[in-house]
Length: 357
Image (cartoon, one colour):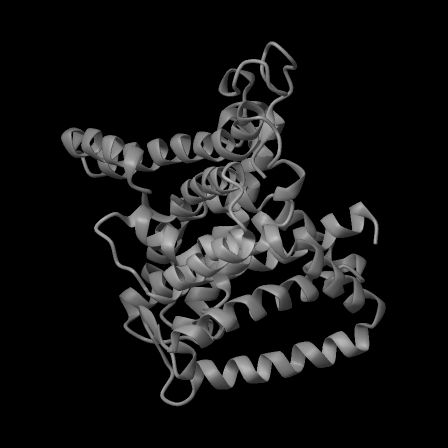
């Protein structure tokens, strides 16, 4: 399997993941105001165990290629990269929502200060990628065995720790998947490679997985609600962890199968630019819902699908407009001044900006 093929299926899997993430927020955003459950609530309910773990597992797949670099180069590429985009978009969101729309300058300043130590809103994912990268490097620095790190991380995940610090809570919940992506990358690549050579068997395996996943999530008593998902057997912590890993690998296989069709190139492109969507999808979400509901669209399924589609398309169009005009480019591409001196991309080495990936 070539390097390009690997990147193709990785991007396709990331494309599926970003759709599921935006879908969750779209469904719950609509459900909050309609008080009803739509079709997307059932899709999100099905994906609950693996929706975010998939993103973190994929983020760790290529960590082995950079983790042994010196701290400066590693920190620039795997830590500062994410913290830059987090800082820019947290500032944009807080200024727009609290400072301008909320007309609360004091609250805006307080929110900006708090966002330094506590992940802000939906941007917590990007913040935690930087934190996870730092943690993985530290673990590597102290030569801790993989089995020990994974064992501790798995226990933290199953413990469902709720800390006063949101960063600590999310670290406990998701670090195991990031580190597993790093450690189990060769196995994941072998599984995907086998699926590419035996597509019929892979499809049968995915169908079986989907049936088992649906049964364990929805029975007994698993039910989607307008703002949440109450799971059945999948709520059992060890089983939930197992389903998260199985689902993450299943999406990788699904992504590899999707890349057999040229008509799915859009999915690969979307995954390649998934961070672009993640950064900006909340901006149009509420506006679209409000406009649609005032226009008479009240069906929860239709409304949530409309909000989902717009929330994905709008950031893509914004990104393409920014790339074409060059105005606001720092929203999606890290400029040379935002690199550590002496690292690729800095003024002392190169002037090419680093895109949001």
